[in-house]
Image (cartoon, rainbow, N blue to C red; front, side, top):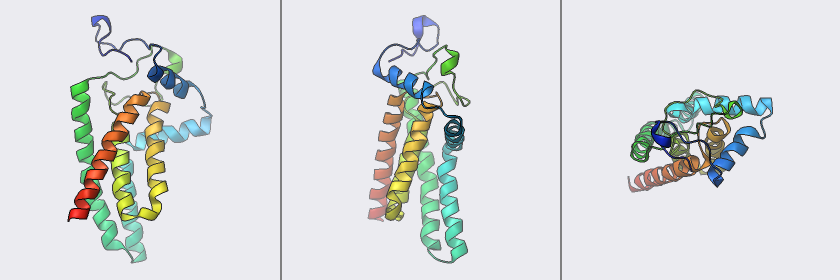
Length: 192
């Protein structure tokens, strides 16, 4: 694992040989055919601020409205999902500030991030947290689409390592936060 403040410089430590770092290097340097790289960069960018999930909920709402069926449920999904995504983002940010782990800073052109790095804090991944929280709520309303929603959450989360802005453990921790937040949301929905 890298240290937050390498030799008092305020910069992330160089990559060490731990499993997290080795997985980061492997995912950042292997399996990068151009079409896949472009698709994952785009997906990763749409995940900023949870916009992918808010947009998906809005799309479901609009599709249901245009078909004239299931409009009320789709509206409930949108109305419930939007605050959940941003509450999850807030919880995740508090954990980031408390743990203060820097993003990968390999100092190696081959490992350069493929997207703009949103902040210097890395652990846990907000994209993973928001994605798995959203997948939980979407699956609650549309259980037949379980594989689609959790598949999208998994790919969105993995894309953050692939584009070079997170270590795998950041994504695992973000996934845990998202599963907890999504689970709490489902418990609340069952209660009301």
